[in-house]
Length: 154
Ligand code: INI
Image (tube, rainbow, N blue to C red; front, top):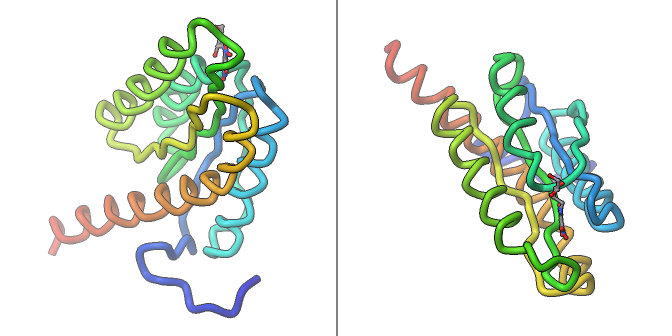
């Protein structure tokens, strides 16, 4: 735990967050997950439950099912789509992005986009800290959502 004060927008205390992560390119997604969990811990949110799906293409449905439980203030979606390994890179990457955005807009539950889209494995491995960024984004948007609800009540 760092001794740095937690900035309000990134204060995870009291928030329930879930992580959905793809197993495809697991060497990378395991590291994204580690980074995300560590960031949540530092932010005071504690460990989030982790739900695995086969690939990035499946992330939107998993996020939607989790959002519909109303059990979570936010969802962190993690994956790695690597062009070198697939001719359908563009479809998988675009559908993951579009689908996750759609879930967020349709359900009102913040879903952060922690899906790496890179040319090769090396680039992906260099960007695993994006897992932490995605965790902090989910916290910030969950806080934003709570503050809008509070403003509407006052
Ligand atoms: N899924 C990924 O998460 N990353 C990839 O790089 C990838 N490639 O290379 O194809 C990938 N494909 C699987 C896809 O997400 C689905 O699981 C699959 O098409 C079955 O629906």
